[in-house]
Image 1 (cartoon, rainbow, N blue to C red):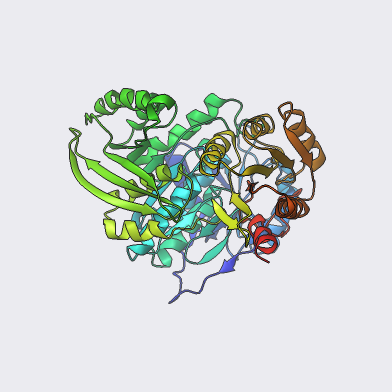
Image 2: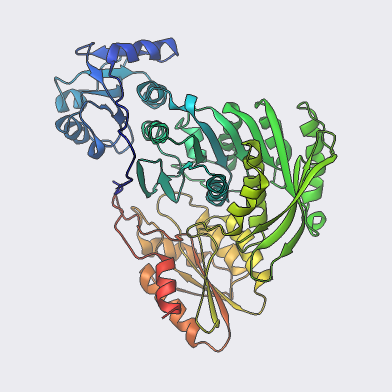
Length: 552
């Protein structure tokens, strides 16, 4: 379980009302889920959780998951759970015998579909906090975290204090900790929304993963804005998505529950994305215009997208928001002009914006944040202030050695699309440096990365070091062996299993090497935990090690 760092609050959090199991069962039946109460029907619950280690007095405990064990229910009841939610068996929705044995006298809410039921029950238990919030959802294969942090920075500059849920951090105004899942399960999600309201905040900025959409973690949550950044192959495995079609279709589901769809016209499969976006009441498109767009095919995709946008009620000859005149700043980062257009494509407004973050690809991320900020009513003074000194933990963090001989680039890039974008940008921005890349692949999921990442890195890197990266229940040796097997012929590479040792060794070698280098420390960013087995032990982050070695 995560170690949560409680954040001090002014005033006292509101106490949730208790709801009886029969009230919850009636609500579920009204929404198409079979439900019955076993035991005391008047049993009342307050709050809910799927983690037996996080149970509070009076909670409804959810029995869910392939790895669920009856002992978890015993622990939950011992910790004060008033009742439990489980999936029944047979036509009569009987309680599974192992659960009866674990908690014979504890009341139960038994349902036909536990995943859907917990997603529908959670907002009821937490008193529909979404009614008092602006909820922004961001999905895509890469860039979700960066865009979320950029938008949060802009909102803070505008005098607001938004909450954030994503792969890096969870901060809802009451608790703040390093995340393990991009999109939490429904009981946790709605608790964070409730905490946000009780903390006096009015905006939730959240990353929405393909798993979160596919498995109903965000079921019933209305997004004021749903942003689609891009699509590439990722998360394809026996425990995630069986193929790209399933992954893509899951991503597109965000449009089914958003009022305004925001779409990046440079994404692959843009026509299909825009077709799906018609489910929203409004579609707002954006595009970064670059000199190499025509060669890369972006112009052709955007041109075809215009007609698709037009079919939804607005017929822009150009995106409603575009970034033009993109230029690199002398001190690093990028400047660009934001053009806002009306439905006929005529420019209504132009503003020059500076982004204090390296990586040309981050202009796309910044423009996405600008679009959403404008839709939320934020002015350009706050937008400029929010982007000028933006820092996204573990995203394009540059750590130069004292003499500038070595430049460490710490980034969360971890899939094929993010690798392609990052390596291309680094090669263009640091053409005179030797490129060394350090990364691994996670255990038990996203298995295609073990073939794709060595292939992409091998096209750019002078040397690759394979190491540990959240192996879970797989052996690090086995993961690295697969990465080695898929390394292109002739590409220099090695394996150093211990990640801290690997990062230290690579940086110390680079300091001693005659040629200047750019060392890419990838996938873990500023994370301070490593997923090993069922545990998340604390480790020293790549960023911390880079600072220790290069700045001493």
